Length: 57
Image (cartoon, rainbow, N blue to C red):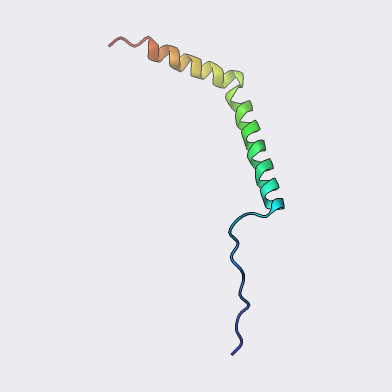
């Protein structure tokens, strides 16, 4: 019976994988920043905070 080839453990990302992962994270951060700073989201968050602050206890 033949043995299957053994693969060495891959403890971390290689340089190219690290670079692609970093670029993907930066792109996601940029998209989220654009969404959060859009006029609709800012207006919604402002209204939510104003409503929360105007509640009488």
